[in-house]
Length: 176
Image (cartoon, rainbow, N blue to C red; front, side, top):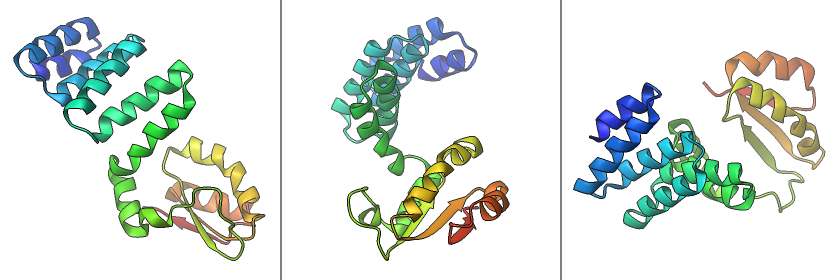
């Protein structure tokens, strides 16, 4: 039933997907089926109902990163950005490229924005798409002005652009 729901969701037959997910939950309260149901509800912009399903999934199995990420999207769309950003931090343990990055650099080295960067090395990891990386690159110069050695790790397609147009970046590396 869950797989039928997923197929229907992929085919944009959201109502039918919701039916299948709901039937599956009558058999077993599986947290991943609750996440799938919440996702289908979110597709219909039933955001409060979707968020409730993600919370139910977390009540069964705490720490499921997919539930937190979906909650983040719901909260942002509902205008609760504080809850949205808090839940979105779970992406660091969800997406394979971020898991690899965090295991390489460690959670304890993550800059929280409060401590001084003077004389320190700061690596910025462009985790989203090319357009997002270009858009967020406007923050590189203010970061550099805080006195750090600035390393930008980005998609190979952006290396030349960042190197030639942003001489204040100390080192540009391909993350691939």
